[in-house]
Structure formats: C-alpha cells, structure tokens
Length: 170
Image 1 (tube, rainbow, N blue to C red):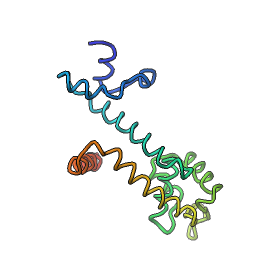
Image 2 (tube, one colour):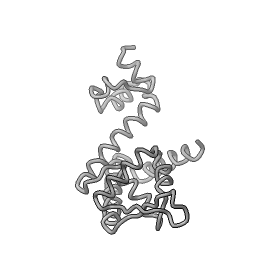
Image 3 (spheres, one colour):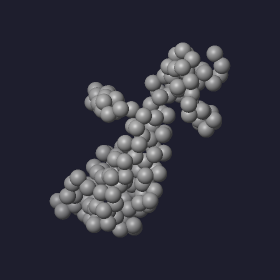
Image 4 (cartoon, helix red, strand yellow):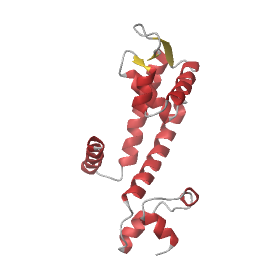
C-alpha cells in the first residue's frame, strides 16, 4: 500500500495532502475493486464539498454559513438569549460575541438586555436580517439540491434520514 493509500484508507487526510487529493479518487477505487474509502474520509470530503457549494450560494448575500446559521437560529424565535444561540451553533461565547457584533454592525440583528435578567443579552433579527435569512434559506435549499443531484430522490432522502438517525443516537 502506498503512503497515499494509507492515509486515504485510515479515514483522514493530512492538511498538506488535502489540496492534491483528486476529486474522482473514490469512484476510481470502486471501479478498480479496491476497498471503499473509510467513512471518515467520505464524510469529511462530502462536508468540504457541501461547504464549498453553500459558501458560493451565500456569497451574493454577503454572509457566510456561520452568519446565516445564526440568523436562522434567531429567525425561529421572537427573542433568544445570545448564550442560547451560541449553544445551538456549537460556538464559544467569545466567538458568539464577535459574530453578533458583526451582524449588529451590518444592521442584521439587534441586541438588548433581557427583560427578566439584565445579565443576559437577547438578540433578535431586524427586518434586513429576516430578509437575508429568508433569501439565504432559498439559496441553501438550491445548493442542497445541486449537491444531492447525483442521487435520485429516494437516495437523497435515505442519506439524509441515515445521517439524522446517526445524530439522534449520539
């Protein structure tokens, strides 16, 4: 087994090799009868490709995926504590403060003290933030359709269902 095959089959790719990894390597291995790549490799590279597709979809709106996800979290509630949004996004408080600062400076969110606990900040969408969240949702839906296009509808739903099941059991 070559060094390239070793890192490929163990389910990871070192950062210095990632850029040189051919995109068609998975189908080449299947066609040649070689063992399938490890799950970690497949998940990582599918995720990287999905990030690329969604980044391109959101770029015209001037937001990245983390900013859009924050807007989405805020859009389903009248008001939500900043710490709660940080928890939902899986980011630390410092990162969340910077994220909200940026969104607030761009006029997409408004931050104010919580009415019952002034130690907490409540963050809510502005009209502009709701507009970006709504337009972003349409763009992300389209990006997801393009990403899943190699699969038929049944396969796409099976993939999403299987991933959701894995997340529910973890």
